[in-house]
Image 1 (cartoon, one colour):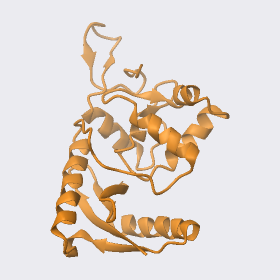
Image 2 (image 1 turned 180 degrees about the vertical axis):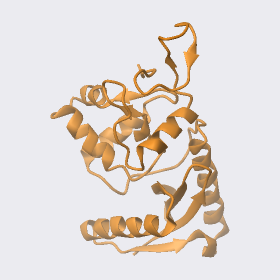
Image 3 (image 1 turned 60 degrees about the vertical axis):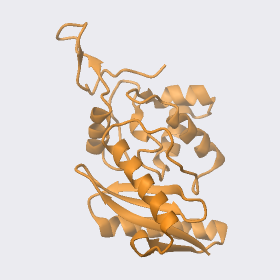
Length: 207
């Protein structure tokens, strides 16, 4: 049996459900939404499926009833860092680890983390950098399997034509996250030397 500490985090754009592995004090799951009961239900289903593969029972424990002050303190630090990410700030030392996913998906997620703050990349670019067969489709599937929202920044991946495409936690939320990270584009209708707020067709791409 393995204990997972969890709590809901309420922000101005979404509620988040966060899970931290008690044995390592690492963030292992983060989901976004508005309905807390639905978020918890989805999380239980995800960990139940994982349990079938690992043959480990995952025990959910609310951080509010955790008795070890050191675990509480580390959990609160992760919450504060996660909130900063949702607000569009850069965070470089948030402790997380993968409990889900295949080795290929881990490679894709690692590549997402390399996308600089305030930049985006495309499915095609990621596939080319990783030399993945089936290209964009395989990358899209890997991104859709991400269970650590914002920390693994799948919101920074857009279509080759600049469109937002889909997002596991809603396209409108993806747009808000990119706006908060100050993803700018040149508005060709105005002065080309001036940067303007996010456009659905023209992004500042990562190198």
